[in-house]
Image (cartoon, rainbow, N blue to C red):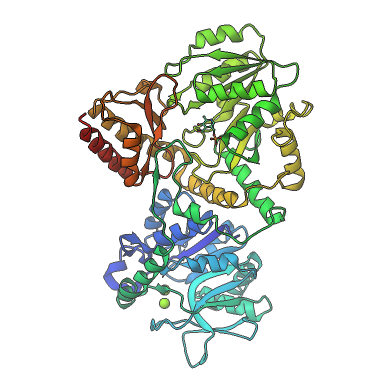
Length: 610
Ligand code: PLP
Ligand code: MG
Ligand code: MG
């Protein structure tokens, strides 16, 4: 899998005249989106994690784009007036780490082309199409083995082309080095384009292959007539192809599994692979490191993953870290705290429960009193009680536990990646979460982010659960890059995509988006005169428990079924004697969608006479 892309975007776009005097060509809009931005989105969906854009003419446009997409890095070719695509590629070289995709900036294309190159086994491959009739064709000539030996716009030089250059190419580092060596070998090559350099490398012994996709939907846009053709012929075809893959969007307002993007859904469709292959081990290792990085430093913390749900991760944590002579205190102020205590009981740990209100903040003074007894070696708590939306002051709780020399165990299943956090600052030693909540992936991977020293300290604790042991799973993975037992393969592919998308959005911005959705919900709840179970200042902004209205015509099923017709899924409450329904606002949900749901909620409440 290729992780880096380079877009050469230094050019003047002079064939457009006035339109591109003050703007790079890539920013011409197709269907409301600049073509280079759409290209960036497609690259992200194809698994690219870093995009280097070589800029020149009106470079500030690209710098602004890089602020929106954090995976973009711009590098300016100050000599763009006197050079061509090789000059722009040259300034990008210091940032290119290995194999990469090289793209032109003025392309409108079907994303299947990226998949073709990602799936290629050969290191250097030019994507080619059949006849485009664009009147600006760059013809490619390849031998019987598909190796490129000529590139030209002149049909007389290549009377029987093997294909036409699309402008998307897969290039290895060694090929790049050779292209650069050739470029620098002679001053007269100052205006060399990259395709000529590729040909030179190919005929000098490092083969560059031509991969032709006969009816490929693509065009470059060099002038008004090409733009016209893109808008009227090519783009509608691309849209149609891509829409064929669309599935109905359901907005999940339940507290996870959360709504996912289409790119995360499609990421699951991959060639079958044995998860014991090195390649898959690399993918899992990458996922683990990134998961750690969203909440902690990878020097001090590590992530241990299992094929399981969030509860599995909770169980792994609770049953693996408390030694036989240890004693655990579990804070129970909701269903999930209660669950931690149940797990402790099943594993016959020495433990006590600190009970607290399910909707009012924990009394920290009372907790301190219990901890100061020095009876406990470990403390377990829930970061965000999904039962009610109550956010616990986890930093204060864990710092206090640390001050008494205790090890801290936190269920952050519904907080991780929805709230910016640093485990060290918060005083958290072990933290459990899952792939299907705020990281916005599919269900199936449960994981525990562990302080390495605290994890190391568990190595002599007798194993209480064969499958869910943290130390065993960690050690085996360190040695083999494999999980001990079959991992959920396709869920890992989706998780990789979800991680990329989390990096692009950033946890901070994600939390802001979630809060924007929550604000819309809370406004509506107040307008309707409904009451929330937890005071606003104690809420997580991730899920809201709303008291059911005391109206005879109200029923949860009625509201659920009404919302479901409009593709919104809501969730019942979970507290014994208090009747609530819950609206979560995590996952790939936009404020406009929450607005739309609130309209439906209002409609339903009016219909029952509220
Ligand atoms: N802990 C918390 C705080 C949760 O919110 C949940 C699920 O909503 C879980 C644990 C359990 O996760 P799972 O249902 O994946 O086992
Ligand atoms: Mg052209
Ligand atoms: Mg062009």
